[in-house]
Structure formats: C-alpha cells, structure tokens
Length: 210
Image 1 (tube, rainbow, N blue to C red):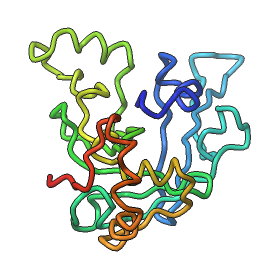
Image 2 (spheres, rainbow, N blue to C red):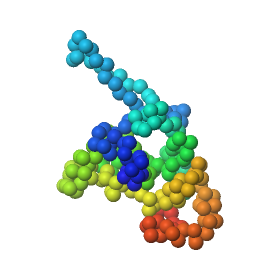
Image 3 (cartoon, helix red, strand yellow):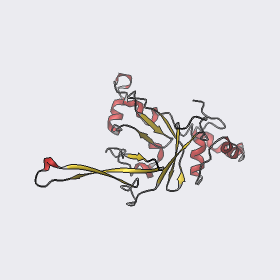
C-alpha cells in the first residue's frame, strides 16, 4: 500500500509496474520469497525450463541478503475484536512486529483470500498489475472483475482503524501486545497524549466492530 511510505514502495516491484513478489508462509513460522529463474537451453531455447527456490524476503531490495520474516497467529490484536485462530496473522519483520494482518476473502469475488494491514497487502492469487487496477478503477461497477476493489482506497484496513499498532510501531516497539491488556497499557498514557493525533483522522479509544 502507498501508506507504507516511499522507503518501502521505492523498492517494491509492484509499485514500479512489475509483478508483485511471491512469498510462501512455511509451517515452521518462517516466510520466504519465491525466486523463479529461467535455465536456458543454448542448443534449443524452446526447451528452456524455469526453476524456483526460496530466499529471504526482499533480497532484491536495498539489502542483497534479505530480511528475516516470521509469522504467527494472534486472536485479539489491539485494534480489532477477538476472532478464532486464522483470522489474524502477525508478522515479525527484521525482529520487529508490524501491525497485524487481517485475513478475509478477496473483495473481487474470485474466491481467493487477501491478507492486509494498514501498510501492506498479500493475496493468495496473482496480484493484478498496479496499472491494470488503476485502469479498472475508472470503470467501477461496470468492471466484471472488480479489480478496482483492490485499490488502496477501497481496501478495508487503514491507519484510521489500525492506529494503535501503527503508533506503537512508529514509536519503536519491538513486540506488539495481543489482547485487551495491550489496550489497557496504552490507555495508561492518558488521553492527553492522543490529542496530537486527532488531526490525522485516528478514531481514539474505539475499536472496529467488524
């Protein structure tokens, strides 16, 4: 999502008009990036094959080594109601928890799944190009595929709803709390501490109910 900021989008192939990165969430709690390479048959190019292997995510960004990413289930993030295991996934990126990802059906009606937080999106299907989504947005409800529903402005998880975890991350938190205790700890800071955030559109002391 564009709300992640230029530091992230400048290294993101999807935002540059190329195909989105492909990730795999492994049973051991690790996340890897799928790398596909063409093995050229110099004698007969038509017989060339494609192989794939795993590497640390974002190896193709500014850090050639990549970034260690772990995943785990949570059931009650700070900004959303309690739900059964599988509804929320928490990623630890480079040793720091990022705002919780919400898992739901794709709004395009293709029976796929989307996993999003206020700054990013994962999809269980090949994500259409940025140009295609933007072009389809001009058609709106006239579009059969409804790819316009994958636009940042049409997705459901924003900074407005996920302000607590986004705030704690930006303040330097390493581990984000899970459950009502986390909200209680944050509320101890006092309402006065939140006054400066009202102009950003945050809903103070409220959780999303859906």
